[in-house]
Image (cartoon, rainbow over all chains, first blue to last red; front, side, top):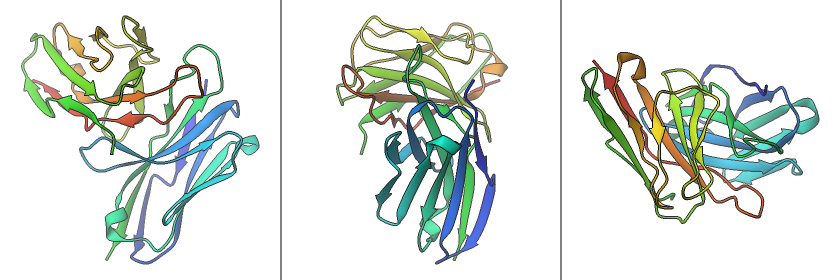
Length: 115
Length: 115
């Protein structure tokens, strides 16, 4: 059964710092990996999706990498801003089989960017 | 921005009541999902649908039921609410179909409290 772990559970950084969030998964047979942002009491906003054949994806100040063989992904945030404060979730989709459209989520990393 | 809507956003209800959580999307997506999320915990899939008249249970057992009579609408029903049903319920949709699975888009969620 796929398990997704995100470390650290919480992170506090001063404004302007670059930071890295980590995600690991136990089964490397994935179709893609998706990073989300969740603000308190809100739904999820998709940030980046990396297909299993890709190594990284970039959007603005965000860069996500994927090392499928080692079961790891990182989300790099450059020049952090207070508006980046949120919980960041990582989720993987299995490659095939029953339930191949289901996502397995980690518990998330709660990020606080201090002005 | 994803066009997926959930109502109500917040609901406080007494034990034993029947409730229906609404979810609608205007993107024409085939696939729709319901997730349950307790505070500080992972999202768990409780129901999903591949299309009209298709419903399946997710990996987390739930006493709720769903229906998919129209492509755009995927309501979740609890026949008799209990305090253990207190949680946040998130609806999502994605394209899928003959091609590779796409990103899942999430609604804002319904925070349910059963007293």
